[in-house]
Structures are given as structure tokens and as C-alpha cells.
Length: 286
Image (cartoon, rainbow, N blue to C red; front, top):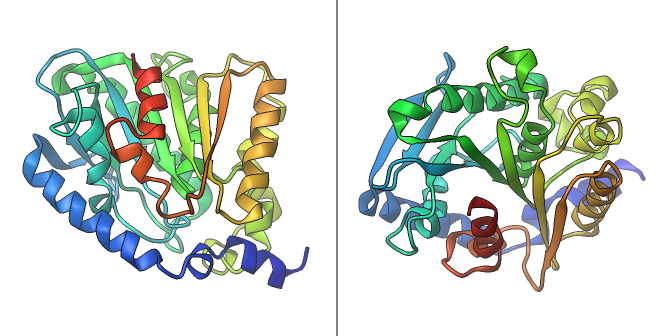
């Protein structure tokens, strides 16, 4: 497939002319969430200025932790636009199911893909180590993310944690939900997005969940993969191929295609109590 075709398939903003309305809604609802819920903002998990997270907490000790990773094609957006995800897990819009951490991470072009993935892993290790003072169950850490965050969710699931910290459990991530995720970065390597990402084929393959899972020989955490029925064919194909490969390696994975949802409004199903994605994620947390 030539670059023009790939550019068209992966340009979500062009595919959804009303995307700015959704992005404005994310930001507005998130500002309300930060006022309504108990939260600790800008906790540093690393040395980089963007290695910070916002933690929304429930009053009951020992609840699980849900980590959410924002999208933006690894080069845009901020955790502050995704606080609204916490509503349906912390409350008051839903029952208190879990604490919720919303992550920031370094962005391209300053950070390359290796560094971005390493930052997410550093965040999860930091949260695992700090579980006691932060008052959540370190044995029940789950990860979710949207778009590029869906890719990073899958990369977190495919991590040999004990190689990063000898004390860490192999199953540090107990499960996850990837929303509109990207699992094969070679098409990204050959389209307009790579102008800022700067990947070569080696880096793209090293950070692609699809070839990684094909060679995986360890137990896999339970995953849910969701995509909008109105997304471009590239996103539907990416999910199909990854889910197929995950099953072949013995992983438990649920595939969801949300009818009529596009790349930007699919996240509302995660943020609304009783929404399709909130319901399946709550099932993993329990």
C-alpha cells in the first residue's frame, strides 16, 4: 500500500470532521471531574516533566487500580483531557470500583518510540511499588488506553517485568482494555505519522504488539480489544489480526466492535456507568 493510501487510512481527524467537538467535550468533562472527585494531580513517576500522573481515589482501601493511557498518536494530547474516564470507576457517576490513574508520557519528536514505551513501563512499576502509600491493591493493577494508548496498553501486557525489576511479579498487569488500538507499527512507519515519530523498521517491529505476541512463550493477561464500527478499515484490520494472534498464543481476549462508534466517540462507552466498555472493564476489575 502506498503512502497516500496509508495516510488516508490513519488520519482519524480527517475521517471524523466533527472530532474537535469530541475533544472539546473531553476537556470540559474532565475539568468538572477534577473538581468533583478526590484526586492527586501531577504525581511524578520519573524524571521527565511529562512523566506524571493524576490519581483519582476511592475511599475504601485495597481496591484495584485502573491505569488509563491517552492517545494522540504518541505526539499530542495530555492526561488533563481524560480525567472524565474516572467518573464511572471512582464515582460519583458510578459505584466505587477502582482507583484510576491517568498517565502522561514523553511525546514525539522529543521522545522516540522506545523511550515512550519505556516510560509507560516505568509508570506501572512506580505504581506497583507505591501501592501501599497510595492505598490500592498492588496485586490488582489493570491497564487501559485509547488509540496510541491502546498500543501502549498492549505493550504493557507484553512486558517481562522481572527483567526491569527483579522483585516485580511476572503478572504485574492483571488485564487490560485496548480501545481503538494499534498493534502493527509498520504501516505507521510508512505514513505521514512517521515524519515526527522517526521510526525505522527495526524500531517499529520491536514496539509492535502483533509480532511480539506471535513469539510470546509466557502466560498472557486477559485483554479486551474494542474498536468502533465506523472507524477506518485499518483499525478494524489491526484489531482482527492482533486478537487472532493473541488467541493463537493461548491468551484470553474479548473482541468488541462498537456499532456506529468512530475513533473519537468510542471512549464515551468507557466513561459512562453502564456503557459497553465500562461494563466489560468492570467485569475484569471484579
